[in-house]
Image (cartoon, rainbow, N blue to C red; front, side, top):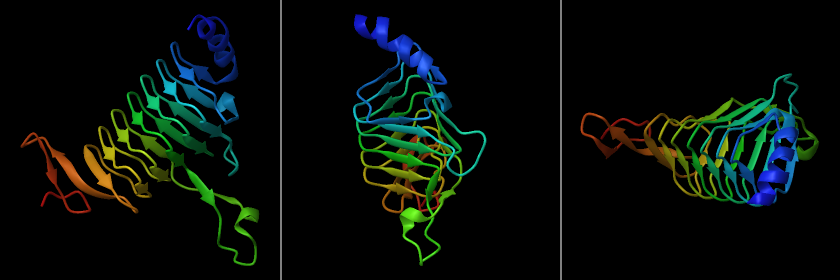
Length: 192
């Protein structure tokens, strides 16, 4: 811990747009454009992460923000080309992929690898949410204190206080403040 406090913390503070006190990153695979990455206090990012805030879609502003007291598991892949915000106190399990972009595929005469990157919607993972293992979030946001079940693929926004699972992810429960319980819903989040 002394080595980290004396050597790594000051280096990370210089490298990133912001790097909060008591935050740590363990053995990353890759970091692209760290000056566009803003990390709050007491953030823990596991081994083999790939973090990028690279404006490949032509936007002048490109920011990846990770809020304080957030935990991101091993082998996370977070690729921002415009805006990804992970708010405070978010729990993200291992092998999670989050992006606000995708490869273009419209021109069938060209390999997908040769087509331009396409900008999707900005991504916001709101405070208190829990993202399960192997989840993929692409151009969609997750509401406050919501849960995304393991192996889910999120391509549409999930509202606050919901549980969503599957590929594509669908809402299965929502918190009822009236009954003070998690209750079953239809795929749109209406109580059944």
